Image (tube, rainbow, N blue to C red; front, side, top):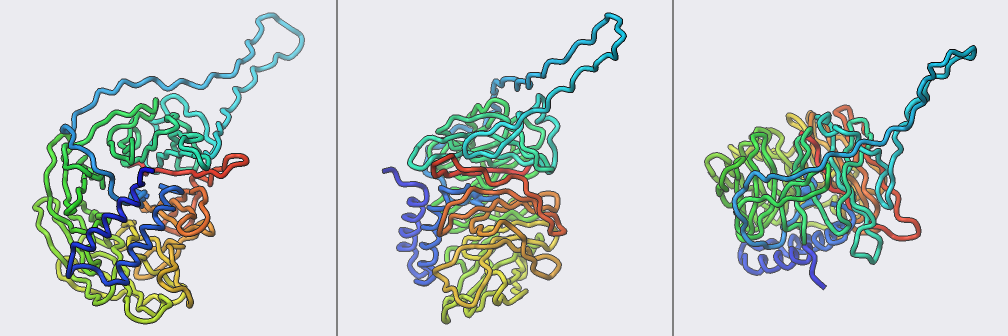
Length: 480
């Protein structure tokens, strides 16, 4: 059997740990990382990160979040000439022609055209057929998704389709994809008829997905083997990472790849600052943060002052401040007794400030958690809501929290969720939630959370295949 990406990542982490020598994390930290990777194997078959991501992509993208398999370098980006087919318009219902003969009876007006009927496929949410020209009318608040359902024990999908989601939650089916094609959406400008995506074996290929036909056209920069897409900036520049060591690359729109600098030898999801001028990631032992300036490549390392401890990098509060969640390995279980805390990190000054000590009923961002910058001074992140009994080895994220205005707020999400990918746009938070970290596998949902805390369900959990266990994956991006 061919190993999946989680197996490859687990092997890589173990090999890296053996080679790091004095940089190797403590036994407790290493064991925790191995536990998380094994859980991600289950998650990979239940919902896509980004991420992310990643989503956010969380997973990790989000998948969500993990390195792609090695692949050979490819030619520089070219502007592909992709032939596209026009989207067929729904067939209108026949109408009654008015008669020209005079009559003493009242004339009957033509019956109204029937409303489009939502199409359904096993394991996918019901969606309306996309009217001609729909994509040109999309704007901020629209979400692009790819749903793929797979019956248990099968290598082919039960259904695989691109679905656009309007801000009010109306779903429109754009195009069907080959049943065996695993597409992960990476970037989409609302209004465009194509999106950037990974596809192929293990997500090893990158290119453009035509949203009207489902056609895929390869288009990726010339980078070392094993490159991974991380983000697209507002000016069209794309950010990529390569491994061993982990390096950050910037590819201007239509230009050649440029090495920005080295992030570290232990892969964590890079976080782009709100002004898109810097990128931050955790250092190998998760006790410091590495920050790279995107213009100059200047590299700064900020110690997190957690001897015999570990932190998760949750996101940027502003252009000079990061939010982390830390705990100590020393001390007894349960986790709540290991000094869990939220800490802000001044990137330029190295100043560390404890914002909140987490007690029972409050959040701990687990190692590997990927948060998002929602607005000035606000970061949302997946977390484990602490209780008085659970030990460290037994936890998965079970909630999403937001630090904003100097206070914590928990987001209301479907009960039982333990796998999350987050994104933010226009001050709103987008959360894909599912269950499958350590127990049952459940279909994903997608919600939009307004600054007020009110949540709008954008996509419901799709119904499973009749009489069969079904795995449904969800890849998605918010239009910008």
